[in-house]
Image (cartoon, rainbow, N blue to C red):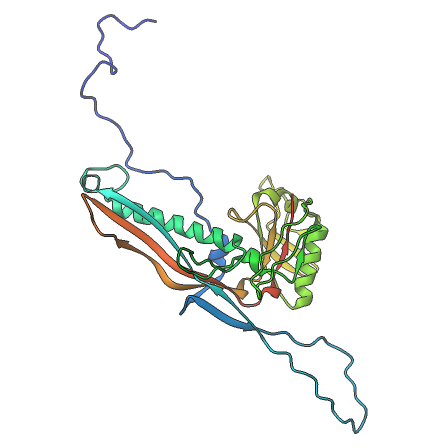
Length: 311
């Protein structure tokens, strides 16, 4: 029916109050599974170093009676390291915006500080999973911390023409011919890690590979709960011949690889903790910067594995 003639409506009225809920809803993901599960520590310089070593291969070690020993050359340790990286977020809020009555927050500065810190945490996770080389800071050149992709070199399953990284010489990996992920590839890389002495316990999987992993037919916790009428159509834990792995979705790594991580072999070293600071005021605005400086330590990359070059 048509509106009654001369009835006073909301769209003609002046003075109706707005209705704005005193909340802000943000569905952007905040999870950083790699950073959340590895250790943290303190960095003391812009280049942090440590050493790795391996035992000689086991052999049938026997000598005859009265043997005159032959001195075997000693293999030195390997010295590796990583550069620190500075990550920052900046913003400015006018003096007026800070004092007006706002919905969802009292202080715009406090709200933006908290938001930028979450964004920084996600950026660190992104770099920690993707950066391929360490870059020394120089005039006009920002330093960069080598990430997981540039560390795992010994235990990999890669496509044709692919080349593994070399963290000792700081050489980036070369992408190879892509192929579909199979359980055989996963087992191959996991076996290599076990033979090397590693015990990976976390597998980071990008969304593009999650379906393939859930399709693995090995001993996995995928079942039907009849009592609760619930079908579990995914793999949360994979129990294989060479270990038990928690399978975790990872948003910030490339779609073309999965990583098998031994969590106690990684550490995020912080030179400067995440902190907010005021920048010089040049007008009627508060300028702020949130920054941090850090590097990623891989105590021994041979404890981990990677399956790369996936479609």
